[in-house]
Length: 407
Ligand SMILES: Nc1nc2c(c(=O)[nH]1)N[C@H]1C(S)=C(S)[C@@H](COP(=O)(O)OP(=O)(O)OC[C@H]3O[C@@H](n4cnc5c(N)ncnc54)[C@H](O)[C@@H]3O)O[C@H]1N2
Ligand code: MOO
Image (cartoon, rainbow, N blue to C red):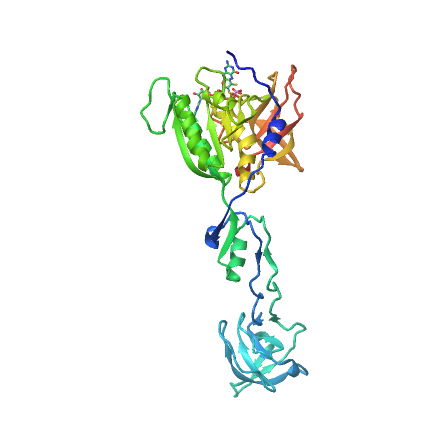
């Protein structure tokens, strides 16, 4: 019997996915592994930073009491290299030669830069300090952070700048959200594994490679990936196994109304069907459902539809599972080249965009067919030609989604 499905809009389907709630898992990681991870707990400064008074310049450290009526001659008591400490207080008109970053003597009030000093001829242990600057050239304890200050707030996506800050304060571990664990199932008896001998009527598993890369770029961790024939029992077995450990399962193929479209059947009989028909092409059969408490995005087998469905539905869900915002940026753009086909449904085209005077312009790249593969590498955006019985005029404003990894 033909399956009657209730079509909903892209926005409605996205809203249904956005309503899903999850409990987020966290993990503690050494900071060297934490680049690009999302902090689940703010990091507080364990100490004052800096935690000793240090010189900002190469020069001579003197007491505040001696800092008047320059030029004056000072007795050079020693040299303090960065990393060393001069343990005695300075006395009357005593100075130490000090390097940038070195700890100043405890009672130093100012560092006079080397350029503002003159040697005293015949007296190598003396120095004439000529000019006293308005600033003391000493970085005081706690100037940047006091102990207990927030170094990095919760929900920050860590980058090398953060990792360096944590290193500076000797923080060695951070608590981050776990990367979402993803399972990928590609279906189809016609599908061959990459490298397998060619066979008549069969195609290579390009969607498997596509989803693997897209999931990784969106921050997902693929913990299971399998390619199966059109077989209902095999599909259920794989769904059950993956649902135990995966936060999200992506599938391709088998969601239409054909005799071997077993994902469609699994979705219908699942815990909760979110949608199984969208008012769009390609990917009208894109299906979302919950199976044993795990969200499943069942994408169309057609490569163009699989690509489109990933960005419109799976990427935002995957990013949310990783506690991050989607990197697909919805904007309005101007149609820069004619597209004269008419459609009884909203058509999502794979395109390229450019920006001029703060405005986006888009045009089709390659084919608009959902089975076409040639433009997956070159498209930098998706854009919508609305359903109409008349061609959309050139320079119409169209809903556009900029794709993240090509910015
Ligand atoms: N009677 C109807 N037939 C179809 C309808 C419909 O409404 N009524 N919808 C069409 C549309 S639109 C689409 S899209 C496809 C969706 O089909 P499925 O998602 O169920 O996918 P399959 O039928 O399994 O495959 C479609 C196409 O993609 C190729 N494919 C599948 N897996 C892969 C893979 N891993 N890598 C590369 N290519 C793959 C497959 O060989 C087919 O050519 O249904 C239409 N039919
Ligand atoms: O919904 Mo299908 O991907 O248009 O051909």
